Length: 400
Image 1 (tube, rainbow, N blue to C red):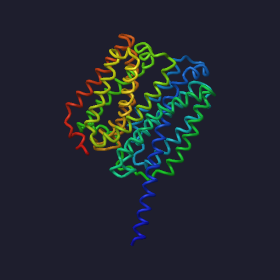
Image 2 (cartoon, rainbow, N blue to C red):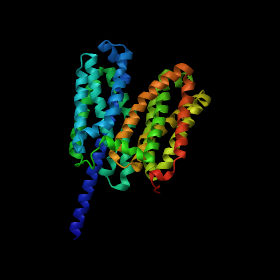
Image 3 (cartoon, helix red, strand yellow):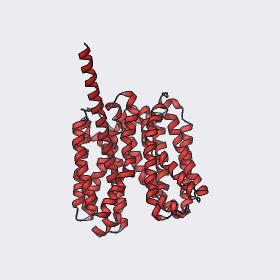
Image 4 (cartoon, rainbow, N blue to C red):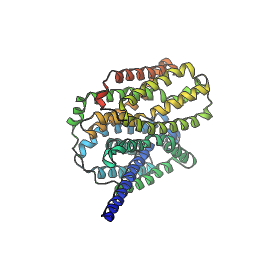
């Protein structure tokens, strides 16, 4: 009996270790996808010169995958029906491998732009499925930690992925950076296939499932708050370099180091929020827009002093790094169909990024850098009021 118990304990430990390796593989997958989405930002001039297009046209390399990701997030789970999610995630990462390889080999801009459409499909589909996987891969008490680990891939891409890819492209060629993504994506494809268990679809996602999610007040509020926060953030953060230079007087040479610290703060915020949101999702989500409003509204007043500006930037980074895992937790606790709700969340998040960047440009042109910070702060305040006016029971009881 003792030997049987020991064998069972060892088997459980082996299974648990494999499950966490699967969580890690999903995290690295998101890390690579977000890196691929944002990598052209750092290599835009080089790509534009290489393919003989203007920087404005080259900017489509960032716009196109974001828009495609927004729509593929809700539509891809509908299209694949009951396809095993292990097959789907592995297939999407294999497609990412192909897209990166073709991008590295592209000899004209149209071909490269077509590969960015494939990248957008991968981002939207992978995020829509991966966001709800934590509860299927680990035991219930470990779900917040697993969600934090999965979504740390987003912050990790900002801290390590994009800077490393940009450095590689600057010191070799942008094609080398794209090709490296292909090689890493191939390794993650193999890891996903080996480490993920069979993940049959619990319930096929239909378009009606997406609409049904709005019957939940918690989902409605979660979607509205996500929209306000993400638009507010990207309206201002898109212009963070001129904000730091013109308002805080920080030299251009120091901006990259500060943004690296900003990303590191976001990574820490992600892990802290994962635990906090698992125990108190309502309080955690309420704190996010309040703290973001504090950072952005205070910046035009206090940001003229570089130490205060840096402190506000780090607060901003830490809080925004907590958004994905916190709002995902809110949505999953409120939703009737976790996969449909996650797909809806991914759609709203990606579309709001594009809207925020575009709206921010209009505000900056009309009112200046301080104006866009104040407008973003106003959106955060509206988001906080919306959460405060929602009963905490819509996201379930808190757990201490």
